Image (cartoon, rainbow, N blue to C red; front, side):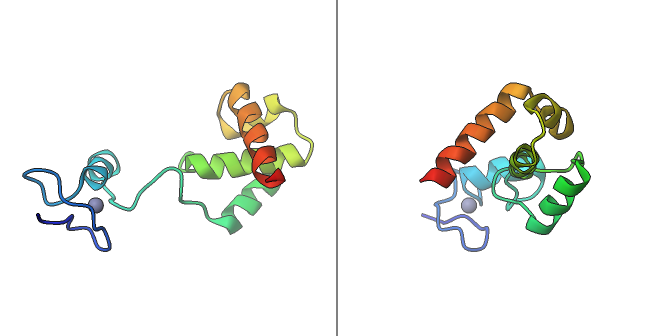
Length: 105
Ligand SMILES: [Zn+2]
């Protein structure tokens, strides 16, 4: 069986395709096989954005989460953080809880 044509991907290509299912989805959705809203975060950007209490529209989900956690640690209310990061306050509470669990582990 032929494998996915994306570099370093060893997953077999989907039937009658040159790339695997995951990469095909990313290409269709984002036009970029390496794109993922969860694994891309520029740490320098994140620190700067926390300072500025600002989130660009292009921020990834992971960046939003990191900024949300950073702002929370600076004492901002969940409602204010939600406003800055443009997510629901409930999401901020969830991210805070996840962050606490992860750092406690
Ligand atoms: Zn692939």
